[in-house]
Length: 97
Image: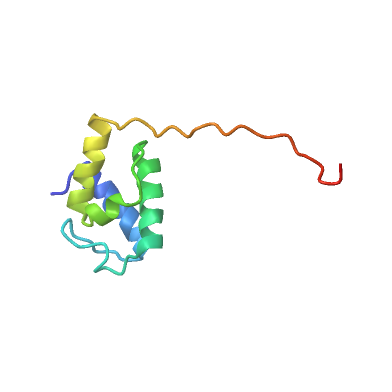
């Protein structure tokens, strides 16, 4: 029986891939997934679980079972959000002056 995390991920994958029957060990890319769908999967996954994982996670964990472990690990021990450095704005200089 799949865990709650696996069941929720299966629903996300099913919606994204348009496939009803997905097993925990089915490979995302063998099911027809590609990089753009991987990004969609991760956006939906992060929203569903309230976590932050990069899209590349699907490449490292391409099955429901593997991705579920990554999601659970992130939920237990969240990685710090990356900090985006502030960029100073320069005054606009009129080239005609």
